[in-house]
Image 1: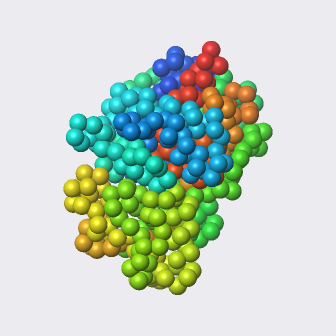
Image 2: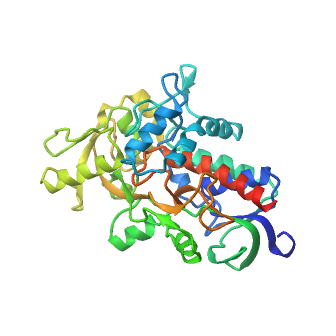
Image 3: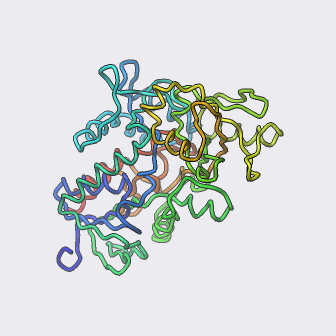
Length: 393
């Protein structure tokens, strides 16, 4: 521990945003401490499969990406944050590659997919373990740096100017970066629903910040992933990568009819599935849960092996081959769209306290596009880390 437990920057959370903030603050010359509720590996980011968006294609531009985000948010996002997100996306990809992330490539360039709500192919992938690859690369940098890591040290209390009680530690810091994610695991338990989330996603840090005086927005806007695994039981709560739909899978009702644009925005697709079941056109899982079909048999073997290997392994282990059998799906609680209000440097309304990743609101408005959460983690994690380090100095 640094002398008397004092640091320039305290980062709370070890998902992609917290790791990116810690690395950026450390590289800016700050003395950095990173605290996390469980192990440093435990986070939602590592479970993110689909990919990360960036306008790197020849027919694409950050302005087009921003327009897609704005439209998918139903014009509720903060335009300033959206423009930063999309304009800094290509450099965020370059930074991740410098840290060792190897994105899937083909034909001399990135393998890009079009995801829900997007007008261009701009989703970069590392197979279907993109979040795992990004968090591992960032962790490797953290673990080889001078950043002080405190695992199993959840934030309990934050006193102004800034003293944090984290597990058994008391840490004084000039600035704080909150990167502790959302609350969907706790919310799903409360609602008696399935969730894609890690058990650590329970939202206490958001509440601590609000109690300390931070403003929040859109906290009621929780997102359902349209394609939760519904059967077999081992797949319940698993988020079937949306890239299945990018590579040709379509949603079908009990009569085998397409009932929605399978590449629409997440909230629209999720609502269409729920509505179809309410109309009596859904199917039932063997254990009595509602579902519809995701016809994955339309995905080519080539696309599946390259971009969906983890999904194939998991389903085949459960006795289902998605390339020859339709799979059962239903929306599951996935993401906290809203969060703490931030400015363009990721600073909250509390001076010296920053927020990035799922705990921050505004970038996605009330509905997030797939592939933008990992991007937000990197873009605003870097901004938060740099700004916190600059203020501390």
